Image (cartoon, rainbow, N blue to C red; front, top):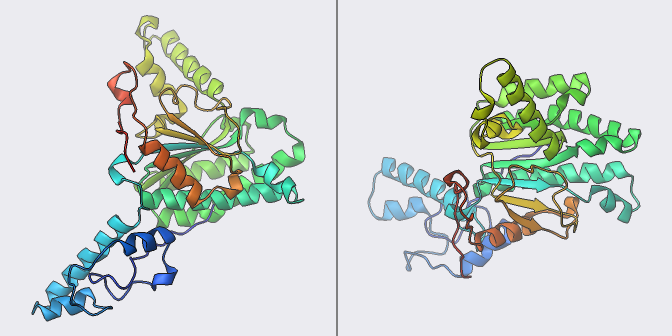
Length: 336
């Protein structure tokens, strides 16, 4: 799951940009479209007028130039990394994804099944990169279900080796990009070497705060609720709690998603054209918005993610009479 985060300043013809800007033809399409509708705040400046030239023209000192350039740079990152149609204040904080369609993608191309999974890893890297750029805080991906253990042995072994290889390759990137990684599920069923690798990766990234990637492996929603109940039963047996004390709050504290600040997904995306949640995060998805994409997972990229997020921001989340804990991000319907 190796990836790198590349931030690009807006097109060079903006008057308040530094010379670090990339050429117009190298920026994403949604920036170019946005640029057409914007005008310079200094109409008489030359086409490639920069922040430094503007400040010098106004007679400001060298220190002011440097401070202004830094301010422009950070404003550029904040304002220009969102595509048109998205609002940062309405961004879902937790997105969950059922990454379906890897095997069908490979078969449609007469490729080995393993090639589909490898293509799926590349798609995951891109989605993680976009979530980081656009302000999503938590991404949970359904990588391997409890039911997937019944697939052919060769396929299961390949997936275990893919998890192992991907984590080893990506550790440096996670540390460099301030990304925390957690793995949830019945990890006792995984190979011991993979279990050790997961423990080391979680420990190495536990202090990272920019983004939280949660990978569900050997996971099912049924398993999650059952193991939470078992933990509570053990506490009751040991006299730590009374059976009458057990409520929703105590159950939630024992769920696998207790590892994150935002345990409830705001948005669930499922790829592959299927319309079900397949035993994934049954408790946590109680009030999530659902988005079903026709694209197979390896084909799911920036355009598809943008559609899902725009659809989310157009919905009004009412929650019925649910407790306030679910109202972490209430989004009003938006007219575009």
